[in-house]
Image 1: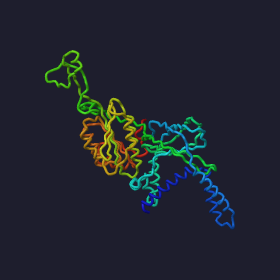
Image 2: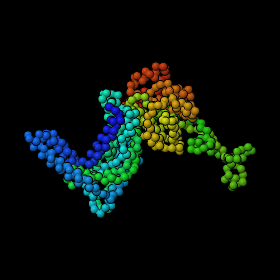
Image 3: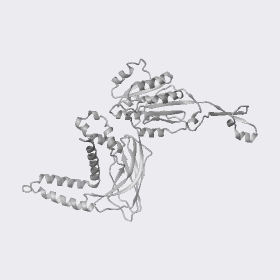
Image 4: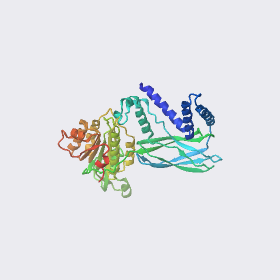
Length: 451
């Protein structure tokens, strides 16, 4: 079947399904089913009277649908009290404050959360593959239906259920609780809410929309992992930590001393000169501190994207466990360019790195080897490294050898679907196995977790 036809069909079915769920009440769906069933069984009007049920039900539905066309308006204001962030697979609750500004009590309302349209673009449907899609039969792979459903769920992040509201007294604010379980990392983009009110017969809902744009960050799933012992030593950094936050070199202040001919004028302590009329020079010492590299392999060669999600979870877990005010952590990965982010020692908080991890996507047209120039140029600043790899090829081996040749401790996690096969691939031409851990997908906590 032409992919364009399938895409338009699925997009239309999604729109109709969403419209049906919000416009039909449970009673309305029962009437629709009764009309449909009686129409089939009562097709021969000479042998059965079931056609009368169909006719009566159809008339009731028509009247109810006409009544639902009359719009209703609400004078309300909503305010979501969202948490700072959520985590994949963890249940979260948030409050929705609804203020009724009308002069009468509003009863029988149902609230639906609206999010940005989760339907994928046509190019995304063609390029993104559902995890385990290669295990599906030929028909399912050709029709792309399950891929479409997966992309819808991934874009929506979580499933929202309708909330039956209590009575809203005039001029008062009512708070209701919404619970969701995010299934995918990234931002949930709220676009507004929809209030539904059944018509007089109770078969169709009348709808009223309110725009309210907010967003909620869903962080990757994290594990309780044992922090690798990297035997880290402090390394010299020209310019000290201030180099990461300002332009130019500056060392750490140590003491004051008398001026000597040839001293740089920029190092004169002018406040002391103003008080004593004597030239005093500021002395500095070179800055040494611990700096770790966290390298995430974003190049996904496998068709199973859950492997990449596991890698992101491992990286997020190490970001959480390695956070300290006494060291710096550099997160590095390949996207449409080389990305490097630092946290610790006043540069940035680990929460910013977790936000990056929540939004990182796999790439297919790059290689992890593209990190080599950046790593080689800054290798002397690192005290150790943790690498999370999705495969093992020449590029991965070169990164491993770079740290070994620089006498720096390195801990490498290689994620795979087949542990024995991957171990054979890695160690067939390497006698030394120290610092490399092959972990099978789904065994993260048992293989790397705390005892």
